[in-house]
Structures are given as structure tokens and as C-alpha cells.
Length: 163
Image (cartoon, rainbow, N blue to C red):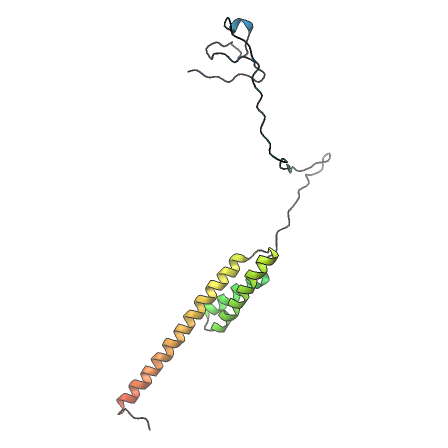
């Protein structure tokens, strides 16, 4: 089946087989007994108020006016949480991790209340804080366990009594 797009304002709704050279419909191209019906005009449906169109406004030869939307600030407690837990993760100061965990929880509650940015930093601070505290507690337990075993082995090698 041949299809073609009729120009805007065309009123012929008959067969695709009859066409004029320029795409418009003439009385000679309408088959006998056919009626010419105006084509329906399709308008896009709008529901409620249409969204406003934000275009730059110019006055004469002036540059376009650009409107910036203010960005929500980043929560400072989230930044502190991430920095402290990073310090705790790379050093043996696991108490920084504990303080970073506290700041992470405070930051998450402030972000929910105030609508600030930085939730990802707060979550990353919490994860790093918990991991670093668990790592360093495990490390020191293993370290002191090895020291205790070495002391026990030394005592056992000397006869098993402490004097």
C-alpha cells in the first residue's frame, strides 16, 4: 500500500492511489461519488496547567538573562564524618572512627530534616567508620592475643612457673 503525507490544510480523505503532482487535491482527482471531508485537526491534550516554558529573555541587543536555581548546601557534619573515618581507616586511631560514626548519624538526621545534600558522604562515613572500628578492634585483639600466647610459651619453656 502506498502512503504519502498530504500537505497541511489538505481536505481529501480518500484513497492513496489518486494524487496530484504537487500533493494537493483537485476536483478532477476526486473519484465520482466520493465526498471531500476536512481532515481532523489534532491538538495535543493538556491536563491541568501546562508547564511554564523557561526561555532566556532578551531586550534589544542585550545578552539573554539566565536564571539560576539555588542548590541546597552540603551538610558539614557529613563532611566531618567522612574525613574523620578516612583518618581512622588509614591510621590506628580508631577513636576517630567512633566520632565519625556519631557525626554520620547526626548528619543523616539533619539532612532528612533540612533537605540538604551530603547523604552519600554521611553513608560513606558510616560504612568506613564501622569497618575501621571493627578492623582496629580485631587487629588489637589479635595483637594482644599473640603477645599473650608468646608470654605463655615463654613461661612454659622455663618450667611453667612464674616467680
